[in-house]
Structure formats: C-alpha cells, structure tokens
Length: 282
Length: 282
Image 1 (cartoon, rainbow over the protein chains, first blue to last red):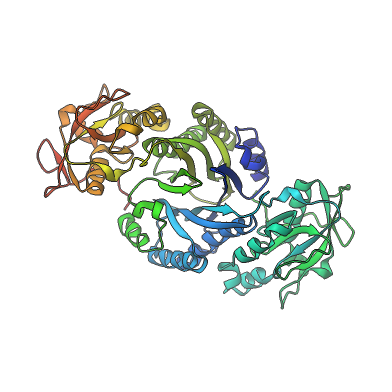
Image 2: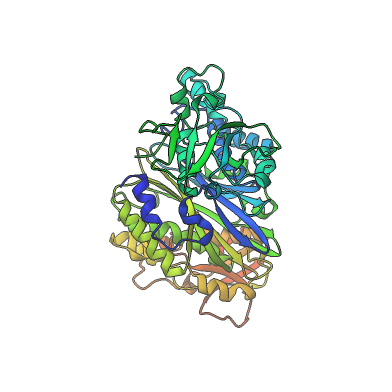
C-alpha cells in the first residue's frame, strides 16, 4: 500500500465534513460562530531532513510547514501541539522551537515526547482562526482564473544541493501574504511537494485544467534546472487562483491560468507535463 | 536531556494560556463562547507496543489513548488528526481506525503519512468540545476531597504479560463516564502512566498530598503483584477527586483522599511510596 492507496482507504472512514474528503491540507471546524483551521504534518529524519541536522532547524521546519498550511487558509495561528522524539541535542530543538514560535507570534499548546530507537520523527498540529469565508481551499478555482505564486520557486532546492540551505531548513510560512490574499482568491494552497504536482492537485480538486508557462515561473536566482525546481517542494510559496486582472494586495507572479477541464489536469507550455511532477511517498 | 528536562525547557517557551503550563494532558482554547479541548499523544513501536503487533490494534490504541484524555476533561470528541508511518499492513491500520472511530462516534479530520526506515511512530491529535466549566483538570483537587477511580487497575498489565492483551492493546476510553462525572469532580485525569505516578501528579498540580490505601484499589481479577499493577499504566481508568460523600453518577471506587500538602506528595498506606511510581521516558 503506497501513500495514495492509504489515503484512498482513509477516505472510506467516517470523515468530519470539515475534513474536505482529505483532499486539502487542513480541516475546518465551525464552532461558536468561528471557523477553526486544523492541520497536521509530520517529518522524519532521512526523509525531510538529513541525519545530523541541527535539531533547532528541525523544530523550525516542523512548525513552519504547518504554519504554511494555515497561511494557505488565510488563518491566524492560535497555537501548535508538538509530538517529538526525544533526540540528542533536545536543547537545540527547544531553541529552534522558541525561534519559530516567536518569529510568528504562535503559542505552544501541548504535545507529547517519546524516546525510541531509529530515525527521529516529529509531528505538529497547528490550529488557527479563519479570517475569511469561505475558507480558501484547493477546490475553488474556476476556469478563466489566473494562476499565481508568491515569492520564488527553487531556493529550497538550491539550498538542499548546497548542503547549507536556510531556504531548505528554515522555510518561511507566508502568513501575512495568506491573510492579505484570503479575500481575493478562489483557491489557495502552499507549494510543499512541487509546483507542478501541487498545481495539478488544485486543478483536480477544482475540476479544471491548470495551464502553466514555465517561462513565467519566478525561479530563484541561480536556478539552472528549471524543471527540477518546478518539481521540488519545500519552497512554501503560496499558489493561488484568482480572477484574471484583479488587483492583488501583495506581490505575486502570474504563471498561467485555469482552463475548462480537459484531458490532462495539468499542461506545461501547452503540452502534457513530465510523468513525475513532485514528491510523493511510495 | 530526559523527558522531564525536555518538558521543563518547553515550559520556558511562549505558552498558550490554555496549555496550563504543560502540566495537564490537554489544552483548552476558548473560542466563540465554546471551549475546545485539544490533546496530542504519540506512540512508537517497541515502546508502546511490541514489534509485530497487528496494525489494527496500533490504530485502536493510538486513538483510544487520546480519546481517554478527552474523557478526563468531560469533553465530547469532535474529531482526530493522525500522523502515521506508512507500515506493512497499512490496510489493517485503516481497519483498526475504522473500528475505534465507529466505536466512539468520532470523525477523522485529517493528518499526514510518512514513509521512513526504522520503528514506526504514530501521532494523534484529538479535539473535543468541553461540556462543563471549569474544564476538569489535574489542578483542582482540594484537601478533604475523596480520591476515586473508575473501573479496575491491572488488566492491562495482565494482558501485556499474557501476550494477547485486549486490555493492553485495545484500551477503553471512558468517555461516557467522563461526561457524567464532569459536573461532580474537582480534578480528573486518566491513569496512563501508573496509578501511583498519576495520583502524585494530580496531588502536585493541586498543591495537596494524595493518600492512597492499597487495599482499597480495585485491582483486576488475577492480579498477583498489586504494587506492580499500581505502577503500570495503560488501564485508562479515570482518577478523580470529588467532595467526600458526594453522590456519583457512575460506579467508582474510593481509593483514598486528598490531604493538606505534606512533606510527600503521595502516601501509600500512610507511608512514603516506592521510588519508582510508574512509567517515565528517560
């Protein structure tokens, strides 16, 4: 059973209506007239970071990738719960946690610690308060929308290749951009698994075809293999669909458009894209 | 850094007021006139279950231990988020998840899957709606209260020793009991790390001394080593402090009393208890 089969099997379980059929990065709970956004991402040594990584960077990345999911929902963070393997250098983990919590004004709510053998794993649940209804999702894009990204694509890959990689280890959740964009978008998500894969996911969830022009993508300075960068995650840019020509409150780059659903959910320069679009667990 | 040092370091981070200084099993968020209860527990192969355990049992235990924390808060479950290693036999994991969700009327909200080497780890965040204010906590016990447990103590140890162990692998979260007891208790928690350890924690959090009479503890039939059973977790009984003599809505056994804080936070048959009271990660 690979990841896709596993998630497909989970879809047959009793799902909360706010789980959005597990087709989004976050769930939405309506309570007391408010909408809460909840997301859970886990990371593991050897998969999401190299063995020997400073535990402070692990803590930063763990929280930042979850806050990025809140950003894509235009949600204000309330707090996080952390599940952590008790690692060597746990002091550094706490220090990185402090840095990321303070950087984004987020509070620790609780969590759990386990001491076990083998690669360390970490989970984070982030809770935020929705600021706009409907809460932006992958599903809302419409044919005729323009497709945009904030920031640039490829810095995380360059950082990973260079082996230092603040862009890879210390991603920036685009919370302010997400809050500003919330009222203007039809669909929004963060680019965590690769621009092409995530754009296809948005198109599929919205019943559209995403058409991307590679030349239009704002690749990070120094990017040599543009296709590799477009298939690499970890940049945590925001990808969103909005009415073409709408005035946007933050800088963003138009990289294509949403079309009526065609034979392919994703077109790259008008053609079928390469088979592998991004990162999927197998 | 052991678990206690790690948690002490976490206490110096920016904490949410609802985190209760990380001295409880769950956090409480006030939102829109409601109170949400959030808890996160993680389990690992080789620590919380033996290698080779049916993944259906792992899923059950993962969710049940988190629902048990909601039970101790007199909270109605809303849903869970699951972080899971993609294991061999993931189909069975999904099946166990279905069983536990259906058994307690809980919905899946979302989560994340990771494929990694080494022992599998799983995290669960459970979210519930508080039904009583103040939300029962470890902190509310008062000198003069009686100390009670629901159910019995020791079945999980017997199950673990027998190697089959439905009581060990498929614990029962006491949700109905917790809801019923909520309006009557001064303090409540679930017994997950050992009756003696957890009673000491409640006493410390409440600024009292807990005095337990071993003969009064309702040990499971077949228990031979009563002290071992009193130091073993996994029974997920509810431990609570309530006014002595109050009429209780569910069966419970009086095992002692809360006293004015003395030199020891816990007395067993009037004396200092053994040094090791239960399970702590080191």
